[in-house]
Length: 108
Picture 1 (tube, helix red, strand yellow):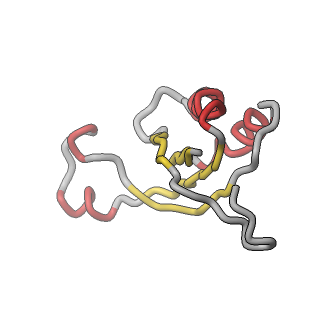
Picture 2 (cartoon, one colour; picture 1 turned 45 degrees about the horizontal axis):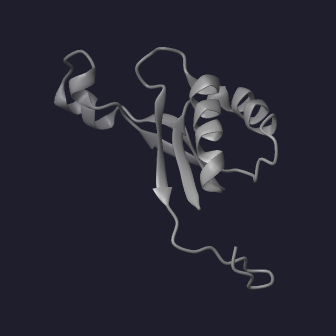
Picture 3 (spheres, one colour; picture 1 turned 135 degrees about the horizontal axis):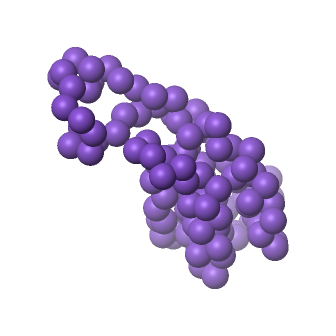
């Protein structure tokens, strides 16, 4: 089992939702509001103050999925959220040791 996480632009959420829903047996998604800034080395030189206070609204997307679904989900996130500009975000995968449903304590 894996968790696919991504930081994306808020204005790409509707496209992302449609792309994820198009994946057969898609397990679901959780979205959090987030703020951040691009690594200073990746952008033009600015003042230290601007670099430290230039937080941009983003979304963090989290999906728990079986290993076989990681690639289609990751690809859907990249396709739906890419603009080709600095600040498009990141996507990464984390190994999950165990998952337990709270409702009935089932191990998933």
